[in-house]
Image (cartoon, rainbow, N blue to C red; front, side, top):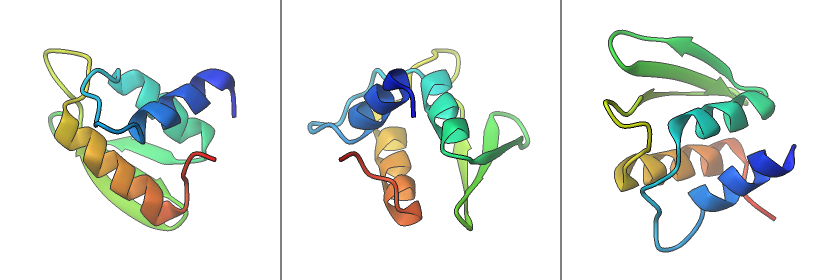
Length: 85
């Protein structure tokens, strides 16, 4: 995992929850972890990683995620067994 991916992972797990993580950085992290990402309807994004599937919404019109999305992504990463060391 590259250092920018590790930084994104750490930002997802920061407390208090951040609301300024760029969605593209999260997608790049997921791809680096081996996730399969496919487009859904509208702003939906389907993500499959380590046998776990989930659907997220790309933020729009802004490029940063909100706190609720970051918490959901944190739960997803914990479920698939990915946490910062």
